Length: 66
Image (cartoon, rainbow, N blue to C red; front, side, top):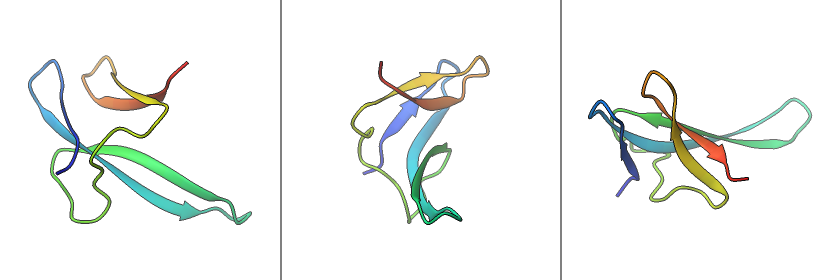
């Protein structure tokens, strides 16, 4: 089951990730929230060292813990 976050406005978002390789050959992982669960890339939990925060518009984002 995908990790879900409901913002202050009551909209539910689901956490996903995708991995890509940069031109220099370094592998990157991109985390994002979507309104629907996608078959590929959905995550069950927030990654270690990250926390969920919201922007002024109510969109959830992942931030590194300090």
